[in-house]
Image (cartoon, rainbow, N blue to C red; front, side):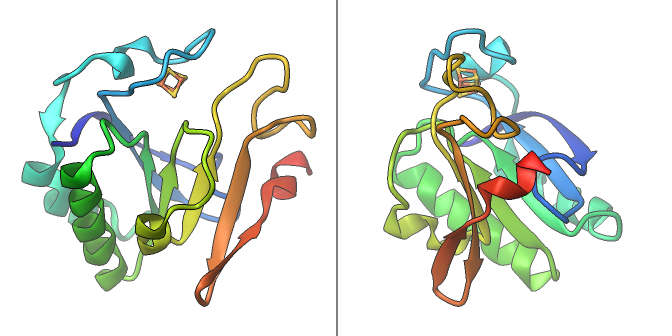
Length: 154
Ligand code: SF4
């Protein structure tokens, strides 16, 4: 079950979008210099499924994209939840983005999102805003995702 700790509007997470950022707990990673250690706690925060529709409806006039920061345990239950959340947002005219901290290729279930950020934070490589970063941001166009990481370097 996905649980969230806070929400915020931001222009920084997704290029050319006003993102409704939803911070998700249960992170399984242990990055050096973690920016938000509380997100590593299991079962921390409120059940997102109980509040998601109200949150989206409240912010839909101010946001252009719902951005999920983290993916919890990322098991089958969480993936199903993400599918429903993405469909709801898109039905309201909003794009969706997933920030995953995993070092993986794009997985089939991720097709529900319009944007993806993949990759762990590695201090020696820097964050998305650093040209040496290992992390990648993708934008979907049709059924294909294109690497737009360089938009963070301008
Ligand atoms: S992915 Fe984010 S929340 Fe998880 S340990 Fe790394 S920096 Fe912290």
